[in-house]
Image (tube, rainbow over all chains, first blue to last red; front, side, top):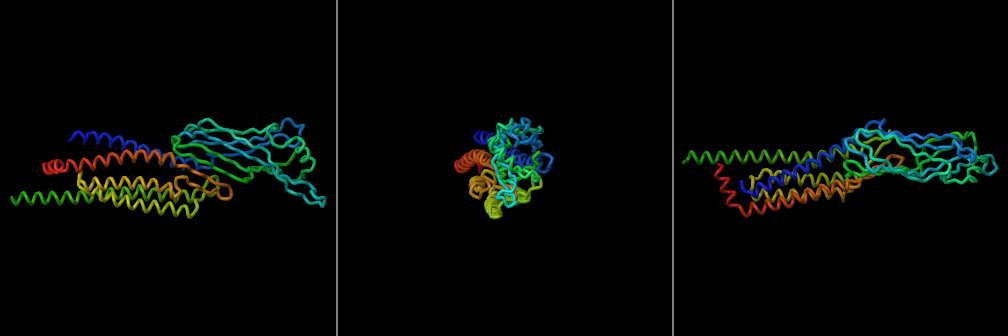
Amino acid sequence: MRYSRIARLIMRIFLLLLASTMSLVSFLGGYSALLILGDEKNIDLNVDMTGNMLNTNDTTFELKIGFKFDNKGYFDLEDLKIELELSMVYEYFNYSGDGKNKPIGVSLYEGKKTFKTVENGEKLKGSISIERADLEITDAIASDIYNHIDPRKDIIFMGDRIAISGKYSLGLISFNVEIEDYEIESFKIS
Amino acid sequence: MSFSKEKIKKTLENAKIKNMIRGVIFATIYIITTIVIPFLTFSWVMSLEIEGVDLELYQDRYNQIIFFVLAFGLLISGTAFFAYSSPSQSIRRGVFSLIQIILNCFYLWSYKFSGALELELVLVDMGVVTIDLAQMILTYMGIYFLVVILKTYDLVDFIVNRNKIKYERGKKR
C-alpha cells in the first residue's frame, strides 16, 4: 500500500469517528426528547398562593410558581432560563353603577431566573417566589382593587408571557418555548 | 491461453456484479439515512403532544422541508450508487464521491433554506416552540468540509497515479 493511502486511511477513520459521534449525538438527542416529552410526569408546573395579595397589611403573602423537570434524556440540560410576565384578571364590582361587573387585567410581575445545569438522570425542582416587594402593583392600587373586587369571583393569574429556554445535546441544540396568554391558576380572595 | 482468457472474463464479470451489489447496498443506506429517517422524524414532530397539548409544524413549512429532504436525498442516493458501484480507486469513483459529498453539504444547507434549521412548532392555543439546530448543522458542515478536502485529494491521486493503480489492480487479478 502506498504511503499516501495509509495517511488518507487514518484521516478517513478519524472523519468516520467524528461523523459517527455526531450521528450518535443527534440520534440520542432526538431519543432523549422522546423520553422526556413522552411522559407527562417529567414536566410539571404548579402555582401556590399564601396570604392575601391585595391586603397591604398582610405580610404572609407569597406567590410560588413551582416546577419539576425530570431529565430522563442522555445529555445535560444547560443554560436553563425561565422568563415570566404575570398578570391577574379580577372582576371589578358594579363598575359603572349599573350592577354589572367588569373584568380588569393588571400587570403583576416581570422577571427571569436561571438555573444550574440539570445533569442527565437528575431531577430539577425549582420555584420562583414572588413576594409583595416583587409585585409591580403599588400598595395604593392593591388597596383600590381590594375595595372594589367582587369577592364571589375568582382572581385569575395569567402568564402573559412564559419563556423557557435552554441547550441540549452538548449545547448543539437550543430550544425556546414561548407561551402567551396562558391561564395559570385561579384563586378566591381570602 | 483460452482457459486464462475465460478466467479473466469470469473474474471481471464477478467484479462487476460485486460492484453493482455494493452500489445498491450503499444507495439503500443513503435512502434510509437521508430520506426515510428525516421523513419519519418530521412526521413524528407533526403529531407530537406535550402535557396534553398538541404540537404542530406549519403544513407549508413541513411540505417545504420534505421537498428538500426528498430532492437532495434522491440525488445523494443516486450518486452513492454510482460512486460505490465504481471500481476501487477509479477516477469514476473519485468524481462521484466528490459530487456526493458536495451534494451532502447542499443537503445540510437545504435545512437552512427549507426552514428546518430553526424549527418552529406551534403549541396549539398556547404559543410557539423554537428548536435551533444551527450549531449541530455547522459542526456537520465542518466535518463535511474535511471530507471534501480528502475526496479532492483522492481524485487527484487517482488521476496522477492512474497507471500505477491499474498495474496494481491487474497484479491482483
